[in-house]
Image (cartoon, rainbow, N blue to C red; front, side):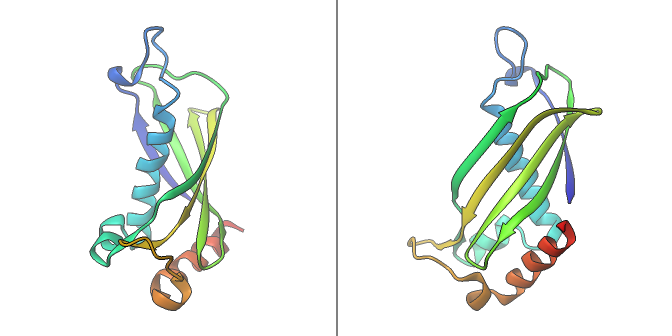
Amino acid sequence: MYNYKHKVRYYETDKMGITHHSNYIRFMEEARIEWMNNMGWSYQKCEELGMVSPVVGVKCSYKANTTFDDIIEISVMLKEYNGIRLIVEYEMRVQDKVVAIGETEHCFLTEKGSPIRIKRDYPQLDEILKNELCEQK
């Protein structure tokens, strides 16, 4: 599990002073990018190798509001990985209160859109993801 902190900015709130729901998807992306950096296989490295990792599914359940200046701690965990696709889970908290939970599903493609089999084509990344999955269990 990796923890990331995001401080809610004024422009991320709506007219009611509440963090707009669409921003939580962005917060998950920020946290996921830092999680990958922390694992030693960054999005930058993926792009340099000609890989892209599109989001093919996203879910987010909102449990409580957040507002300007709140610090949201986002826990990032690898839920599933099968060598081709992965599912990442997120739990977002302000202090001890869960404010949102979510998940994103990803695959890996070449820049031209062909599927990549991570286990075969990038064994080092496969090992990193397998180890991360084992740590989650």
